Length: 302
Image (tube, rainbow, N blue to C red; front, side):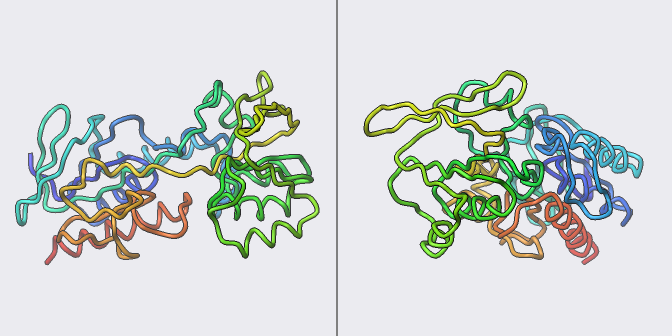
């Protein structure tokens, strides 16, 4: 069947794109490999989205899904394994069949790189977080730690230092990959402690995180740090592997696209955390979805 727009990914960017495309009276198919809502469904509390003071990630995703389907968007749980550009027509192959559309929006997002420690998934949302700006306020006045050595980890530690009573910055090396200027700012913070040459080897606590075990890579000595929040900032993995033959992918794996969400291929757009951008938040994903759909409609209307 031929659609006006096929959207790959049903996270906040993809579902927002579906809403905007349907409001422009375009036929829309949304393809999702896992679950409607994307990774936001794992977030217990959202408090940084405009107008909505407080909502769970699951409820947010459910309302997005209901809004998109009420407008007439068609959603299918199928994994996209490739997209082929055939001039005015784009062919989308999934693990269950093939579909065609005049325009395609890639909104597959990115996955947080995990530490690989036992019970990490079980404690996610219960003390373990991958987004300091999303969840930092829940740990105001408490002891927390950041794991990582790049700019994201350094900026997270700087942000949390204004909220938490103590911030441990845990890094597996003896120097940071991030900007030295940010490191110097952290050195001046009395409530920030650097933990060099160390890896997190265990998460403590039953129903909620109560601390971490860190192991010194040089001596093998183990140390227990009591804390309430652990912010993991060891990188992200963009979900773009299936599109390497279609669009330009940068060294970090992100699809190259500007604020207008255009790729180098006419009629193919990228929206959300899988594109090159500075800020990856719920609100910017939704904004990308609106922009990508608007641009796709312009493209189709010629």
